[in-house]
Image (cartoon, rainbow, N blue to C red; front, side):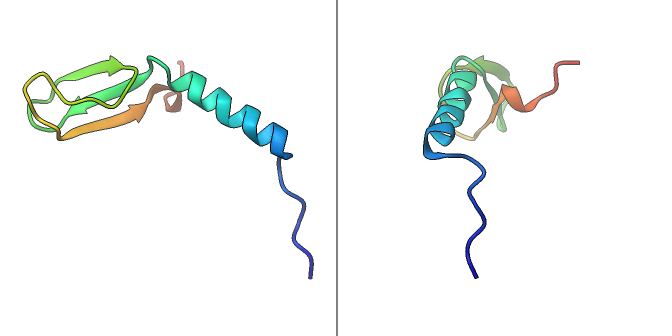
Length: 65
C-alpha cells in the first residue's frame, strides 16, 4: 500500500507556514488567568501584574463578524 500524496508540496507548505507566522505578528490575544486582564501582543509575554499564568491565542483563529 502506498501513502496518499501530500496535501502541499514542500514549497506550498513553507508558504503556508510563513503565512501563519505573518498572521501571528502583533496578533496574539493574551489573557491573564490571575487578574483577568486581556491585551494584544506580538509575542507570548507575562502579565503586568507579574503573573506568568497567561493564555495566548492567535487572533486569526477568531471570525471577523
